[in-house]
Image (cartoon, rainbow, N blue to C red):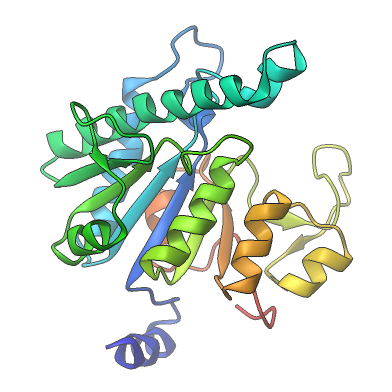
Amino acid sequence: MVQIQAYMGELTGKRQFRRVLLKLSGEALREPGSADNISPPIVESIAAQIKQAHQTGLEIALVVGGGNFWRGVSASNRGMERATADYMGMLATVMNSLAVQSMLEAMDVPTRVQSAIEMKNVAEPFIRRVAMRHLELGRVVIFAAGTGNPFFSTDTTAALRASEIGADCVFKATKVDGIYDSDPAKNPDAVRYDSVSFHDCLTRQLKVMDATAFSLCMENNMPIVVFSMNEEDNIRRALVGEDIGTVVNANGTV
């Protein structure tokens, strides 16, 4: 099946995936300038794009950050004990995950939230084989509460869960349209890469994910696609394999 998909990808010019993990930041669910932590119209737009990609037969897992509610690192910098601050951040990811689940199921997309911190009244516990079975049955799976441990980011959660479920790729939705050789907000002459290798990311000190997450992807040869979610329909386009964003992989090829 994977070989057939790869061959079809050559014919259509699209990347081909069977199972993917989409990483969204918590801030992505908040409307800029709004006092609301979660914007229902934005969540609806995200869910609609995921639904369209899901309808192609793609198996989709998600990790959603919690930064629209709480950032553990920021709180610890203001004097809060770091582990406690991180646990609070994990709970914020659960709220976001439930919001995305609710919108997806309103669109008739079967969805399960699995939490790394047990809270059986609102989410399933994370069990790897159960998560994989959900995906095989056509359900979207949202991994909440991070890894269940403090000191790890949701980027690390995405890299870890993608490796555990045998995903073909991690998609990281960001504010920029890929990876640049310098900060495009500060340098108007910054050059965007279409593709780059893990090794070059390290040697050029390109910021893709935090160090732990990036190391996990590199060690497990897990490709990463970094793309902008601010452009209309980009989440769907990325998931179905259109050539957008920057691809990070072992050999630096698209």
